[in-house]
Image (cartoon, rainbow, N blue to C red):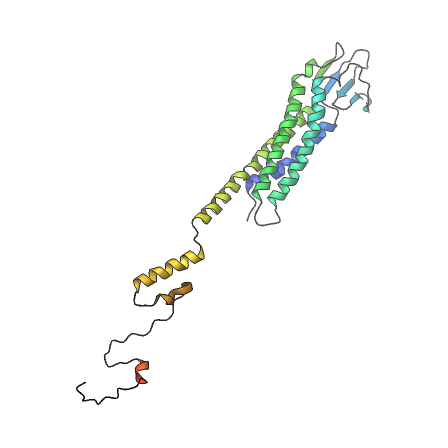
Length: 257
């Protein structure tokens, strides 16, 4: 049996979303701040949810672990992203493991229930990361920044949006396996409802045959098996084998008795 298309879509998009969300979680590129007063003009500061890095455009050098003097990491969107993004990565890994056991490409028939459960986990992980990046993007211009600086959306937010969408689409595709699981259960239930016990079938068959042929002993139909019926004779001159060996009458043939 070929793997359903919905399962293939889910099992392919899931790992892609995991890579994008993992990169978005670890990389310091949620917000880019430039033209910072009292700093070199070509300096760009990359702010993430774990670290802050300064990149010099002229020398192509990057320095991380910059001190947070404005209380950037204490803001609520950053704190929420710190909690939701790692949780999304963990749930995604768990969903991929369950989905792999459900798809079971090495066997003929997939396990639709496990595939659906794995898709549900992927769908939830996509929602978690989508909430984190959306909230951060919504509060981007409310985060503390040095007066006179310019700020733009970093590449990590873009990767977070893409990864979240891929996980949601892949998870939804895998959850369609629940419909196939329900169909199989209905077919099994219907098969059980229309099946008869062997003993009932044999008794019903015996009673029917006995009613059609009342001259035949009902004991011939025990256990649902029919014994051979004695041969019938239409020629009056024919006799049964038992009559050949039967004792003749002791009376004279011309006796009036």
